[in-house]
Structures are given as C-alpha cells and as structure tokens.
Length: 294
Length: 87
Image (tube, chains in turn purple, yellow):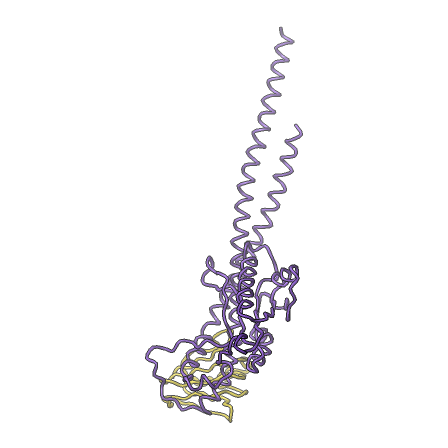
C-alpha cells in the first residue's frame, strides 16, 4: 500500500523535528541557568547603589542635578526628542518573546509621539531591528553585537551619549523596553523610564546616618548617578537575556511535546494499516487455498 | 568588621577583615574596625583587604566606598581580582 510508505516518511520527519526541538530545549535550559545566575549576581550592586543614592539625595540637591530634573514637555518648550531603547534577542524560535517586546515598544512610541516628542529608536538585538526596518522606521543606532553575555561596558557604550544629551536638555525622556525577569514562567515586557532618574525609594526611617562625606554629597551624586543609570540598562540587558532563554525553553518544550503526540498518532495509524494489510493477505491466502481444495 | 566588594556583575568578596586600604579619589584611604560612618568616591587603583594574615588585592575603578555600623561596602564599576592575591 502506497500510503503506508508515506506514513513511514512522515514518522521519520516528525521524529527528526522532535530531536531538534528537544536539543534546543536542553540548550536553552542550560543557558537559562547561567543567565539566571547573572541576574541574581547583579542584584547586590543595584541594591546598594540605590540605597546610597536615596541616602544622599535631598530635595535641594535634586533640583540641581540635570539627571534628576524632569524637562518640560515639548508643548511647554522642553526638548523635543525622546529615545526608546528596545531590547530584543538576536535569535528567534522563542515563542511570543520578541513579538511582545515589539508590541510594547510600538505602544510606547505612540504614547511618546502623542505627547509631542520626536521618538528616536535604538535597537539592541536583530529581531527588533529587523521588524522596525521592515515597517520602514529608521534607527538612531542599532546593535546586534550584544549577545548572550551582556557586560557593563555594553550598557555604558549605549547609555553614555544619552546621558550627555539628556544633561544638555537635548533629549526629554529615555525609556528602555525590556523583559522583566520575575520568574522563569513570568517575564512580561515592561518599559522602564531611565531618564529622568526616578529616585529610588528612601529606606524606612528616612534618617540618613551621620556620614563623613568626602568630598561632599553633590560631588558624590555626580559620580554615582551615571553609574546608576548605566546599571539600569545593564540589568535590563541581563534580565532580557534570561527572559529570552526562558521563553525559548517553554516554546521548545511545547514543540517537543506536540511532536511527541503527533508521532504517537502517526505510529498508531501506521501499525493499524500494516496489520490490516497482513490480515487481508492471510484472508486472500486462505481463500485461495480453500478454492484449490474445493 | 564585615567587608563586601561588589561589581555590577557580582559580589566579588564578602567576609570578615581586619583592615581595608582603598584608593579614594584623593589618595589612599585606610580603614580599620569601628571606623566612623564614611562615604567617599573611589578613584582607580589597588584595593587591599586584609583578613587573618591574607591580603586580597583587587584592581578597582570608579564607584564608592561606604562605612556604616562597622561594615565596609565597596562598590566599583570595574573590579578585577589581582592574580597575585594570597600572601
């Protein structure tokens, strides 16, 4: 029977697909583990930094620092440009991961445009860049060299010029579209407003310990604020990498499971057909023998 | 006194120590137990953490050093453990 052979071919091909998705799942799992470790390892720095900055800032100081100042809206004569940094992955096959980030970025671009800003886009990761190029948007800059292991240097190389331009009142707002890595199964796309710097919440009590400050609070802040801003992007990069691996693992696990189900159904059909064929052949033989004896 | 050295990527060192010598913005700064609360900007140079006869060295650049309640926290943007550490 011809279909029998066709079935055999399909079984083989589904089996191969399953092997591939299974391998990708395993690869993503091991990369996820490492990415997760990096997210955890990055926490103490961010936490300590926000604590210290919250300790140092006083309302009068806040008014003095460009990075803490909220520029007026374009309609009120403020800077007319805003920057959205979109972080996506360089590779696909991660379920809805990149699509969700792109959707979030579009939403933010529309919102900022509605406020009167000319939105400039910085794309990190091939997938986001590819999409916005396809719909005909230009980029202020694009990066695809930041792979699975983002470093603080990567973050600084993107952020530094933005910090300068923001301080000079050329840019009104900088936002980062990233995946927030809450857990392996929960990493929603989010937008973080990086500039102006949102003051980290003051520790309970509010009283700052009586420090000896060297030099003074102002100089300290001046040194630490850019650090803080850069670190926000670094964390966004690290978290998004972890979220990507988590999304890929889930997607590939589903694909493997589906392939398994399909394989089972196909094998059942194949065996039934094979048996039916044998039964028929026996029936024919018996029939033939009976006719000869008759 | 407790000492932690933190880089953006990870906590590089966390433990008890007797003394810390850090490259502050205006020169080297030594800290022993029960130092008064202090906060200062780091320059670049060698950070030395001495505990139980062992001196750990780290090349650091940018960040700050904070002392509160007998614990020292060094946050630096770049931290690199010096190869010739134990002595």
